[in-house]
Image (cartoon, rainbow, N blue to C red; front, side, top):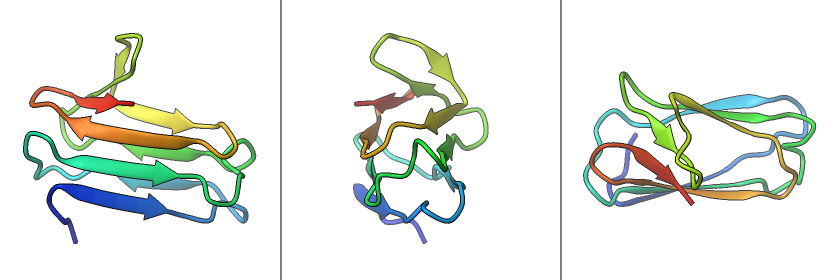
Length: 88
């Protein structure tokens, strides 16, 4: 299920790493929030995959088709800006 505008994903990765796939149906301004609620991304990473040919752009301008979250207690916000998923 994909909810437009805002989507929050809080997952417990204390037992194993996991993957989140970004939606292929997205609209300008759609926002996805990811939070490490158990402070375990440094042990069991979260991998975020962009759909199809979509890409993720970080604050330094680096662009890729996936994002590896490996910092304990991190919070990531992704916003679709029409060309990229922009990471904040």
